[in-house]
Structure formats: C-alpha cells, structure tokens
Image (cartoon, rainbow, N blue to C red; front, side, top):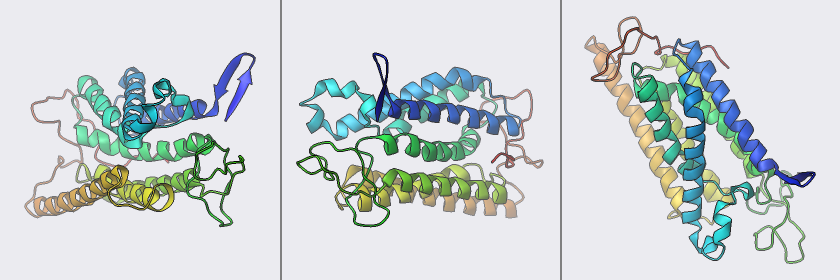
Length: 292
C-alpha cells in the first residue's frame, strides 16, 4: 500500500518495519531492565542490528529469487516493495547483536542474553506480520474459497491474480503467522515462569523448535508448492530438529547436574559470566521477569 504526502511517496510496508523495530528496542530494554541488566548499550547497537537484519534478509531473498532479479537488477534494492527473508535477517542480525553484547556487556553470558531476547523476537515477528506483509500487494498465500479468505491487491503473474486484473480470495497468511508468533511468545513466557530460564539456553532452544515447526507448515501448506526440498522448508525442519534436540539435551544435563549437586547457575539463582570473563557485580538473570 502506498500513499502520497505531496511529492513524497510513502510505503506502509516501510512504516510497519520502522514501528516493529522500535517496538523491539522498547521491549528488549524493558526485559533487560526487569532483571537488572544494563540496557543503555542497546541504543548503540540498535541501528547496526536493524541494518544487518535488513541486509541479510534482502540478500537471502534475492539469492533465493535470483532468476527474477537477474532480469530486474534495479529491483534488488527496492525493499519497500517487500521481499525480506526471516532466516536472512537472523543470519546477520543475531551475530551483530551478539557482538555488541560481548563488547558492552561481557559479564552476562551470551546464552542468558539470548534467552531474554527470544520472546522479544516472537513478539516483534507477530507485530511485523501485521504491519508488514499484511499491508503488501503480495501479502496473501494460496487461493481459497474459505470464509477466511481475503482479497489482496493484484500484480500480474501472481497466482491469485487473473489476467484481467481481477483478484481471488487468498489465505491471509500474515494474519495466521501473527497469531502463531503470538502463541509462541505466550509459550516462551510460560516456559520462563516454569523454569526460571534454567538451564540457560532452554528458552532460546524452545523458540527455535516452535518457530521451525510453524515456519515449515506455513511454507508447505499455505505459501509454496508442497515439496520437501524447498530451501525454506528444509531450513525450518533443521531449525525445529536442532531446537527440540537442544531442549532435550539441556534438560537431561540439568537434571543430571542437579542430582550431583551442580547446575548452570550459582546457588542464589544468578548466572556465572562466560569463560575467561570477570564481573564487577553479580546480575540476577536466571529468573523470569514480570513484563507482559
């Protein structure tokens, strides 16, 4: 969707992305502050993480659709038309965030910080689906005769667009994905409450397992042709298997260490710094926060 402010052309897709990134920063700061972790460094990291995420998301999308962009190289930079890969955003965005965390907050283990960040990612994805793809021309999925079908703006060549420009009802995939991500966020918050983020990494692994499953089902049933060798589907399967395998391994190891009187945290519930690092103060990041 596009509207004009005088000579300026404004894309609602870009506005949606900007609001989503702002929400992510606000929510991340809130969660870090709730467990006593300094969050001022997030302001310095924010623009770099956003830039890395967009570059990675666009690069993976272009590579995956290279046959199209080979005939339209000028369209490679037209991110306001959509075309951002979630996996590509993670590919560059997460390492950039980790680099800033290690630079400005070395006393907090990386996995502990990622556990805190995991629900933020899911909440942001839920918001982003509503303010991003739902507002796009090609926002829908497969054609459907169901009552839940929605009409999206038509582009010639799209499977839901007839030659005369008439649209058909399509599966409102962005709405479904927003609901899925919100459900995953609620599950992760429940896991936090039940486990106190122990063992470290369990919230992140659960997010990977859950998101891998829904990402595969979205692509297989609603978006792409049903084929198991599709790159997105294969990546989603790998993510789901790795996530749930890690959850099982962490819980088994945690139970064994508990029986032996060990554990991955100090007796008072705090988390030890990463190997080779020292800390001037002990920050309690093992327990759940109270944000919603």
